[in-house]
Figure: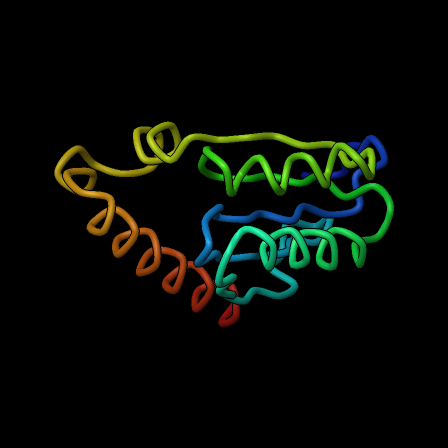
Length: 130
């Protein structure tokens, strides 16, 4: 990501995915601004493979793929990203929660997600105002 005139090292954006059959996707441009986001549901692993194939196939060259989570859904995404030679990073939910949330906000996964959604909405509103 480009910050204060730093070189981008060929990075053109970041696609962030919350892995699962119910997934959240967000694309950030090289300037760090949210370009698009959406949620999607894949009924099973075969559908998830098609979603990963389509989404990753539409990305411009130079995108970094960041995935939160693990297990079979994350492996589907990571395998498709490797096949396409897309740079990847995997982040366990516990790691970003520890970095960004207070201990009381991390008691349950659902509670942590609620706080994160609320915080992202506030950040988006502040960004859009100024």
